[in-house]
Image (cartoon, rainbow, N blue to C red; front, side, top):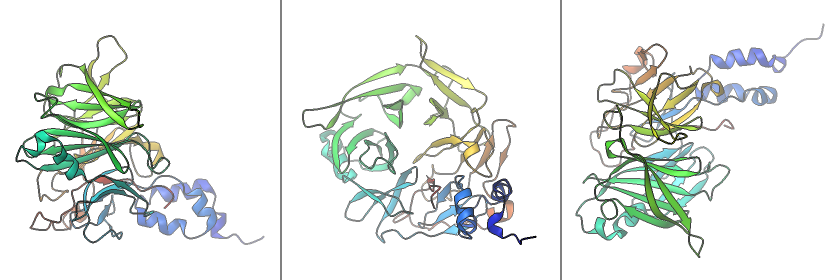
Amino acid sequence: MASLSWSDLPPELLGLVLKCLPSLADRVRLRAVCHPWRTNARQQPMPLLTLPDGAFLSIPDGEIIRVPVPDDARCYGSVDNWLLLMQNDGGCSLVNPFSKAIVELPMLSTVWFSDSSNATSGLNPILYKPVVLSPLDSSPDSLVAVLILDDGYCSTVCICQPPIAADVSSSRARWPLQVFDDVAFFNGKLHGLGSSNKLFVFDIEYDLSNQPKITSIKCIIDYGDGLRDLPQSSDCHGQARLYLKHRRTVAFDVFEAGLSSNTSRWRKVNNLGGQVLCVGRHCSKSFPAVEYNGIEGDCIYFMCDYYPNADPLRDSGIYSMRTGMITPLLSGALLSETVAVPQHHGGQWCPTWIFPADSM
């Protein structure tokens, strides 16, 4: 009988091995063994969590991964497998830390101050959240929107056709009674979640020079109807879903925007249809659990990103909508070994999710 090699391991057995290796580093090592293993090990790796010192935390094994980025760069958010980085000179870019690809953006702080109402306010931007119309890996010229919140709790939405800032709209000037807490592209349109749980859609048109402009906004859900606190939005399997996060997280309520009927309203849901939500102020993303190893469907991954200088694992976990239980992102032993957060805010990275591509 001819001897068998490890490269002949049946794909179904390799799949069982992968289910025991949700760690990105371990999956990369396994796929490096031989070409057949690399070809067959195609399920997505687990999301990573950025730490204040610029490292990535692998979940659930707790391994610290360091990927080179510019020394003076600071992370202010993320979208998919791209980081929103700003440098000391104000330069902004979306950077894929794994492929090293870069999409240049306008200087967002300069763009913010270019709005006269912002420039004279005496305030400063403190939070950024980027969203893209199309995945940057396949569409590097995709329309990019960035929500900017300032320390006076007003919002500015910047529309970028990289690397140019095509339009900027400040709530202080155009919608003084409305603050946007979150934005997301859904069905090809930019939506904004406003105060009092109102949902808006932005009308974006292209001018004669082919630059996108925000021409108007329309409120499509005018009341919260049972919502409480300030939810954040995420695109989830073709429907907009919202999550609620409290300072001491004990449970989540999930609502979807019912937009197909004549009367649009929020509807509470009891499951995510097998999807998973990773939620945060700087990045939210939903995905099918079946595409990832080691992830159960109808779960919400969360971390602490609402206090400056906070340890992102201070209030973190995995909430199951099936059981109503919260389990740790890491094992109990690993939680006690969390990387210490620097004492000074300057130079820190904001905690956010990043989703490595399966090609790693």
